[in-house]
Structure formats: structure tokens, C-alpha cells
Length: 99
Image (cartoon, rainbow, N blue to C red; front, top):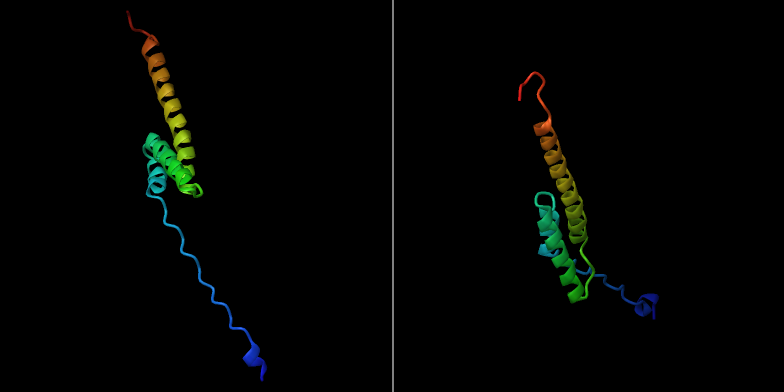
């Protein structure tokens, strides 16, 4: 007997297929840039589906939720600032005008 007869065959390693991305997670990340409220909604739906399915949350969904909240806050602050400045400008008397 030779050593080749006793040698064990080399194991075959097969890479497990990557799970497909959740469509809601992709939608959450894309829409959070333009309509943050939709990013928040889609992200929460995707995370809820992951919880019910017993799988890990998708990073895109989490990013969509976080960025959705951040951009919503920025949009609200910008609108408040614009309204405040417009109100201040409307109430400022024009020099030399009689009123």
C-alpha cells in the first residue's frame, strides 16, 4: 500500500449563495434622498419583514431610516428658517416709505 491509497480526498468547498437584497431596503435607501418620509416608511417595513422572517436587518434599510430622519429634520429646519426670514422681511419697514 502506498500513502496515496490511504490519503483522504480533499473536501470541496462551495460558497453559499448570497441572499438576495430586499426590494424594500433598496427602495428605502434610494427614496430617502428625495422623499425622506418614504425612505423612513420603506426602511421600517423592510426591517419588520426581516424580523418576521427571522433574518438579520438589511443595512440599506437601516441607512434609509437613519438618513430619512436626518433629511426630514434638515427639510423641516429649512422650511422654518425660510418662513421666519420671509416673515421678518415682510414686517421690516422700508426706509423712506410712507405708510
